[in-house]
Length: 284
Image (cartoon, rainbow, N blue to C red; front, top):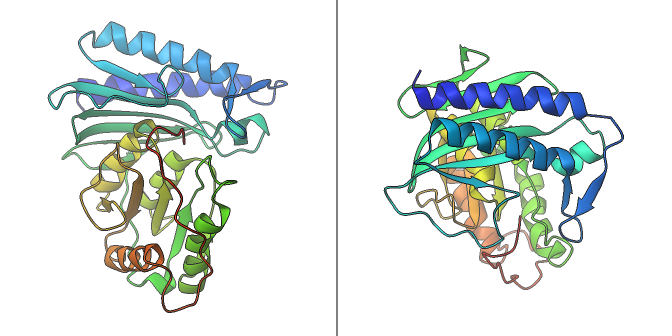
């Protein structure tokens, strides 16, 4: 295990202890947007993790969700950067729904190097580093063997502008309901990505995630044998608007379906609203 991953795992597990200690204790929250919440736990855990990372790696950039502005500047291609989500699934946490996580990933430009996702409610820690495999609580994991989209269980999520573009996002849900074995919406993208990595889900798609949502989870998916891209099958970009991961076996089918929906839902007569303005500066 590299020093990067060793430190990241220690930080994630201590953060998990802090989150567990705060869970259910009369959680107060504020609104960052109409339906986008933040709690004192988000701020406290991010401050703790940032302090630890700066002490260990003073030359590294740290991009935390709560400290970052909506418009995130892409780091230089040779800059090592940590992407930190102190509490992925804050709305779940605020409502005491047990589906939230701590996510910490390391990248150099678009090269994803290492990632840790800790699920405090299940006490599960997912880890991976480039070329080293993916693990759950120290046991190697791999993606599912499902070979057809019709037999697949797929995860998804909805951006924070969903009230403005509900018909657009639901057009995707409709087609996946008609095509797959089922879809799930858990509320923590980092956990969903890890669910693909360990075979609990066969694939996952979502619009407008941020790098702190995806960097760690995508490293884990890739090291578990899965595939990551945008909706057109192009190389995954943590600063892009589209996240698609799968076990690899159904990836082409998912790309094909996503392209069809984006082109207007031909073939099933889906009722699709006009395509929304998907502004990179909107928080998600």
